[in-house]
Image (tube, rainbow, N blue to C red; front, side):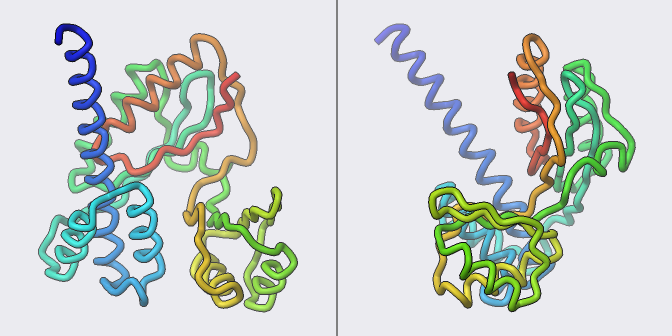
Length: 238
């Protein structure tokens, strides 16, 4: 079997480890969402969206059910949101969103990712002003009908893009539930390709050469941390 078998075995182990991290992150955020907003997906749109997204990412049902059941019991871990800002390779701007049960540990781990890649973690608000906190809904539909439904529901639409019938709706994150409900009422059971609240950069920072390589390392280090849920940035790799 020799080296080829060893390579395949290592690849399988890496894939398994990556899946375990994905499952762990979804389990944690589903638990927190259910604990904060209720365990019934019909009454908690954010939870329903998370469950749909988890299923698309092939998270097993038992992982989802375990997280919701833990929220029902009310005696699970006490996670808190932690958000860090800073400057990555090439001066790009970065926001790191975490869920943690130990803020000191998480801050130390995230800071280590910055320092080991010669980056600088910043203070609160240092880069946040260069991002829009937006809900993003992507689906196939009629642009005029979608815009009419959103306006009739008094949704503050920031932008709507149409690419060959695929619509991307941008709205402030506070309008998420209202926007999704308006579109679902208008079009029925929509299959959203993207259904998320994200930090969207207002501009971009070109990152190339050695900085681009360091940026990939920086992202990999952050994504390896169990506490890290999302990393947002304005890097444009060239």
